[in-house]
Image (cartoon, rainbow, N blue to C red; front, side, top):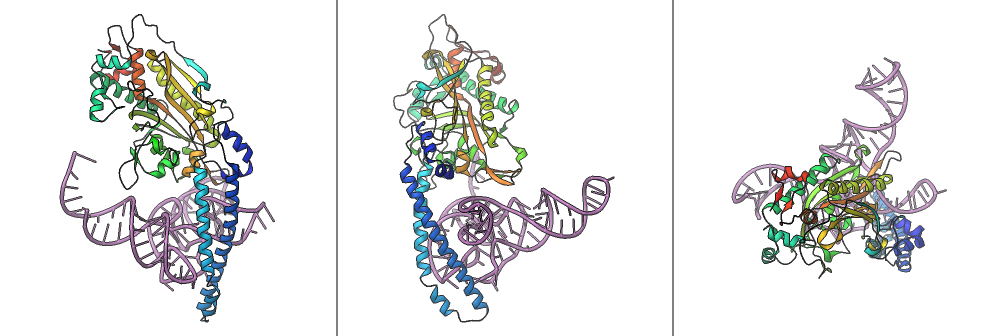
Length: 425
RNA sequence: GGUGGGGUGGCUGAGUGGUCGAAAGCGGCGGUCUUGAAAACCGUUGAGUGUAACAGCUCCCAGGGUUCGAAUCCCUGCCCCACCGCCA
């Protein structure tokens, strides 16, 4: 959520900034509603004050043994007026809340203009795509010939956009997960955390998936309104929901977390239907940082580097782009996407998305820290990113390390996790 | 699943329906004392909204209700604890 005060004091700036994201802010409605709110709120609070002082007076009179009947009479219609005013206030507040909760975050100054991914700007590139002297296979064919990937059985078990893995491929998938988690915990200073894969509405509201993006989620058929997590970001970030970090020396708080992720992929019919690029269920190692406001830009750079380090140690060529305004997510102020080279597509494909949310999520969540300089609670900044999407990393390893005979060389750093195996065939 | 007991400030924990945003203790912060520290003593110490600053208003798990007045009474939900049953 944006700071309502900021919108109020700089409405045109807000509108302009949001336009970069392709969002049209209806200022007139918003301002009108806010004025209405203010008027009703003043009225309500005056009535409340009246009630409080009168009630206190009645209490005193009663204690003094006076006759309170006339006092009660005086206060008779106050109650009616007050409940009416409170009703109106709640209504207008709910309306405002709803509107505010659906306004996206403002892009950072350095975010390039643009409408979609075509306008994202490459900021660096690492590694050289390998030259193959044979006809390469994509991961689907490779997986099939290795008896390692089976989409037909998955669709029998469930439906489309799921996968079954076997043998060396399944193990490679697990090895990648372990390697990523160990690296971030052991070398990049993250605390490992394990969280629920099912969350409530409040958590999804906190990180910004709700109320606007319900369609992207799998909802459980349960009166408790539970959802499968679309990313570990949701449970991990919400760890600090409604919390005040009293001791600022524990900041930054850095969590690394491996979870499955569940996405309904509503609206992406026909995109990436082949293979395991876009699945309803996939594994991800997520990095989440809670930082002091002045540190979030640096934290985003650091965190992006942690994700890139995984690709470099795996020897996978990648490029990093900064998302343009139109491609930025709802909650993000700035996002770096890391894209890995996928030989069969002769393209770089997203494998990690690292974002700073500034105080947008923190405000929704009321995640704060006590600033020792002011002695006051202030909103934290949140930063997160994939480090990395495991399924897509598996694709990249299979395709980039494939050999003419259809076997796949295991990158050096993964071999300890593969029982020393150097190649799967 | 059954039965019983609970959810109050950073923590522990009081709180006959009226001056309670809330005793007390601990912890934190500031001070006195001390070469320094400890101890002792004194003061201070929840969040939000609002204001130039006050004032005012809201918040004692959440949402409803009763009442002139609710932390306190009633209803619903959520969560926690104990015991029993079942269970990976």
